[in-house]
Image 1 (cartoon, rainbow, N blue to C red):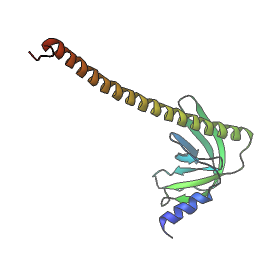
Image 2 (image 1 turned 30 degrees about the vertical axis):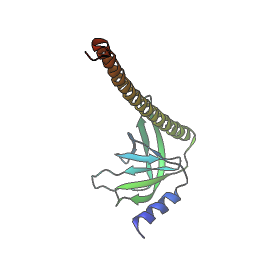
Image 3 (image 1 turned 60 degrees about the vertical axis):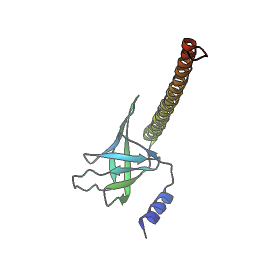
Length: 160
């Protein structure tokens, strides 16, 4: 099977929507695993390049510092796949309980809110660029009209 077909099959196995995340990590077995993405069902994490194996089941905490809050919560998970030649692991959460479920949902909501803020900032910046270009164009047009009027006033319509 080729890599494209394997990627499609892997995507179809997912039961939950995923959020790409930066700055989040799972603290497991005394190591820090940067998260690539997360869902209500589990996460995808990069393994450190220290050569040590990570064994299932995973017990640890997930940490993330957003622009407005710090979120951390305990989790238990099982490794369900090793991807990217063993450089990444896909983990499925074991049953989360009360406060951990609330923290995970708060975490996912915070990621989504930050994503929306980022998109809004990009849109405002794009609008400012468009307005700046329009202002520049109208400034050139206005300057040209003023220069033409000055020349007409200076030399009159006769050209002398």
